[in-house]
Length: 623
Ligand code: HEM
Image 1 (spheres, rainbow, N blue to C red):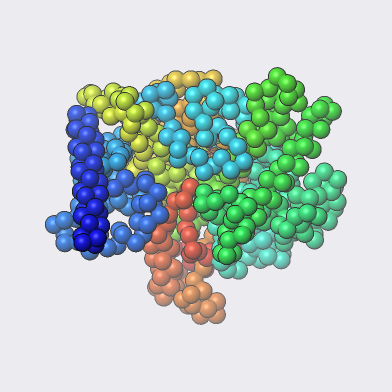
Image 2: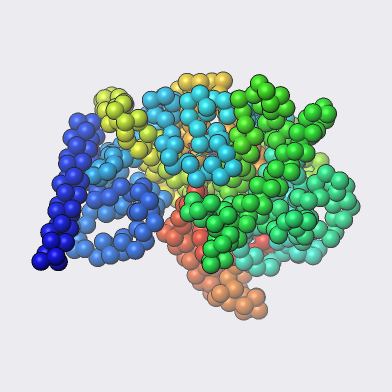
């Protein structure tokens, strides 16, 4: 009897739940259908915590359904579809904007340049869905995690640090650290031809060190150079020693480098529990990340206090000095009058460190791999470098003279194309407020984006043949050169809020192909576009110039043949090509099918080894 009662109660609860879901689905569908846009129905919200945490289990099972039951609904349940399948879904749906409706959500994916521009330029109508950014508030609120008046305050506070003067410092730091990276890769005497097992990790280090110095006035020494650079370490001892030392300072268990890397690499665990609890977890990675959150916070606290004293005594550091600028801008010294809290400064420092490091590192890493797969483009890059730098030693490169040349030739074409084919942020999130539907226009027709829609500005726009007619899925940096066969077109739409837009000179590639506005969005567009765009561009282009001026990058083939075996095979011959092809097939597969984006698109758990060899000593000039 009791059992029957429990069963009955359970059945009532399930029925109630199902009826509720049915009603919600009906309500969402009615709103979606009145939009005039095509609609795909899914059983769950793709962005729900439940689905994001468990789709790896469910998706393979669902893919076993009979072909007649599968379809677009199943494909869009893969949170990485935009990177894996690209534009095909839009083709299947028959529109460059469509809606995805589930009982608990309405989502929209956009791959139309005109609509993209309307959304990015109407900031008030299409705000950021802030709930997605809460996890970045480990140390405090920031410009990434705020909207409206709060965002304006954060952006005004941080914008002065991203001026041209600072980009010059980024250039010098990139030169310095790119040479260190190259020393690490090419070994004693710069001989090269050694297998670099995890180039992604080294690229991360490079980007981390550049932002540490350019953003925070902390020069971190590379582990392989610490001993050689005793003089330099000595010089920075008074102020920065606790940040550069390999041994953790008293009171710390991790050095600055370890704390930051560990925190950034495992940031998703910080959402599970506060750091004090994480440090007590039985799982090592939880304990490590808990410790890293606490210790990096302590380092930042010390740096903050140090800077506060410097600002109070009228000292100023070289270049960007983000902390100094934040402190000065916030008038935090006058604690009576300021509305900005210390946590706002630490919050901004953290997101700038995060945003300024991972994206840039990935872009550099992907560029190296794509060039290793496309030999002809690599040669074109080297020829352009020879032409624009005319054999000048690195010590004589200047920001005023050489950077503009790099920005109007192959290094920038390579960077732009890398960010086109492998955009680090695959879906840029926007939204409409609940109960606040918005009109959009596409191809001369009006549509209504329902209120409460989660909008994804989708990286598939980079593969839309309307804007990228020639081989849109392939890496072809030459398409950016104006002397190439690829067609050019441009629609000029001004951003809505010019004073809050990216810093002056952000559009640096004056002589290169200008895509249709809204069709190329690696840095997003409009007033909420990337504040570090030029910072990243200077850094990536400089690193490419340093590396490819004297070296080539190849795929390592250790898995398929020893060095002696390769040497025995004819240079450029069929058998060497076959070995290279195996490494190329693996690399292409990993880049095309296996990456995932926790915050940005990355290879996870696998690496694609490379070799850096002197120009003229290449073993595999293929692709
Ligand atoms: C290749 C490198 C980079 C790419 C592809 C990139 C991409 C982006 C994108 C797509 C956004 C918009 C995100 C959104 O709306 O959710 C963004 C925002 C942002 N980026 Fe970058 N970024 C790069 C490098 C950098 C660097 C080097 C910094 C700082 C040093 C930086 C700092 C920021 C900040 C602070 C924001 C938030 C701006 C705001 O909301 O007002 N980024 N970035």
